[in-house]
Amino acid sequence: MCWRVKIFYNLHKNYLHQKNNKKLLKILNSCYTSHEYTTRGHQNNFSENKRKYLQYSWKAGLISSVIGVSYYLWKNEVYALDLITIKETPGVRKSHLKTYTVEEVGKHDNENDGIWIYYKEGVYDITKFVLKHPGGPEKIMMAAGGSIEPFWMIFANHNVSEIYQLLESMRIGNLDVSKDSKKLEATEDPYANDPKRHKVLKVNGPKPFCGETPGPLLCESFLTPADTFYVRNHLPVPEIDIKDYELEIAIEDDTKKVINFEDIKKYPKYTVTTAIMCGGNRRSEMNAVKPLKGLSWGVGAVGNASWSGARLTDVLADLKINEDDWKHVQFEGYDLDPSGVPYGGSIPISRALDSRADIILAYEMNGEPIPRDHGYPIRAIVPGVVGARNVKWLAKIVISNEESRSQFQRGDYKGFSPSVDWDTVDFSKSPAILDMPVTSAICTPTPGETVKLKDGKIPVKGYAWSGGGKKIIRIDLTVDQGKTWHVAHQLIDDENAKEGRHWSWTLWSAEIPIDVDKKEVEVWVKAVDASYNVQPESFENIWNLRGLLCNAYHRVNVKIKK
Ligand SMILES: Nc1nc2c(c(=O)[nH]1)N[C@H]1C(S)=C(S)[C@@H](COP(=O)(O)O)O[C@H]1N2
Ligand SMILES: [Mo]
Image 1 (spheres, protein in one colour):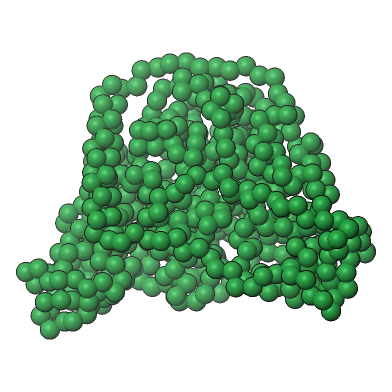
Image 2 (tube, rainbow, N blue to C red):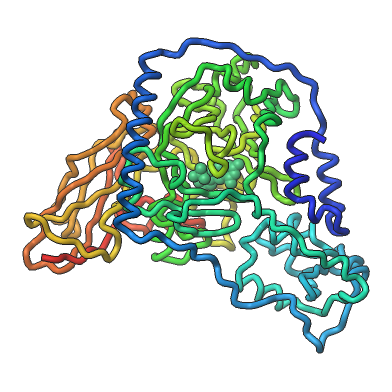
């Protein structure tokens, strides 16, 4: 059994034996073959001066980060876990309904006989719903004739009252638990082995874990500490033993080499400091204009860290890839969904083969091994590009003429016209998001906060960033709806960044004068990047159904204390 299958097997072994998971085993057995391969490595000398600078800079960054975190924790109360509360219990016995055995339910696993599933003691006819399943019919069909429970333990975003209600609306009977109680064995939570998280992260979704850094903490340090860096997972965090770690590199279906952790460390070590931002950062503001589907991120689905590892161009060098022959480089993670499909994403070949794009296969974050939540042991870092393509727990790189087939490349993380809705959307018509647009946010004061005037001014702090390596050249602020603009003069960015390779964010601060009679003001911020791109004024005209690219002016209401 190959390593990737092993991870999957360990993760899901508790229900692999169940009747309805025969399909999973079939997929597993057909998907993976073992490879014969050789490994390779070489050493070069990386500019000693640069290395020293980078070592210094992350250390300085880390120290200031620690101070920043301590200060923040001292100043503010930490967030408590706001786990989703489950209002309704589905699958409880309803005495007026007919009872079916597990075998009877099992016969209804196809369109002709109808598609049934069970959840706890409830039996459901989902025939009509299958085609409408937002996750795709093939995913829900894996449960056909069997229990839906193990799948919901993986896709735990189903455990909300709306979905429980939807399920109960399809209820047709009770499951006979007396004869076949074995079938109701408890299944283990696949998220049970997820790492412990810092409680300062504001939880937007517990399983898969999604948590953001509170704004005021973000702007405390140029480098975001790994522990308080936002986390966006789509599946359980894979458990990877570094001794067993392998990275497969293929050209289409043809595996060219498989390298291990030590092989990757033999390449020249390269450090790049870059922000990573989720495509849905600031979605809550867009949602306020018109409701959206998706996690309600505030301003904290972003962080800035230094990442060290092998350059992608070095790792691909011996494959002698001709840029004109291929179109995409795909990345796959070790995190697999219950059908064995990995998280994935891809980038254009021209970007992947450009050494100035600074793409690395990272093994360190802020000078330490990458923590599990952020992609241990190896993660693709693609600076300037939407978070989704920075694939964690990197398992495979494929040179291809096709984009990644992953749902997250083809059926998500794309922008649309504000008039496109869920009935008219065609994901094949929009390109996948790559570089992110210019954005900025106020981190302190926070919305509704009371601020004391100092010499007639209020202090405001925040971040700004533009994708594609574009430097932030100006931050404009107003407290009178744009009648007067103030420029933030204190900017912190990566002074060593070269033109067109400004991957880090810019932290800014300003003191804005306030009229003496004002009890309340709305502070607006907009950033300007090196191409003189500027943020749009409002969310109305950039609204898109997935709530991505939310980069309108950030507006924060502040109460003034004299
Ligand atoms: N393998 C894998 N890589 C992944 C993801 C994932 O779920 N699995 N999430 C992506 C998304 S959408 C984002 S925004 C970033 C989040 O990175 P972080 O959790 O280190 O902040 O990782 C990306 N890489
Ligand atoms: Mo994301």
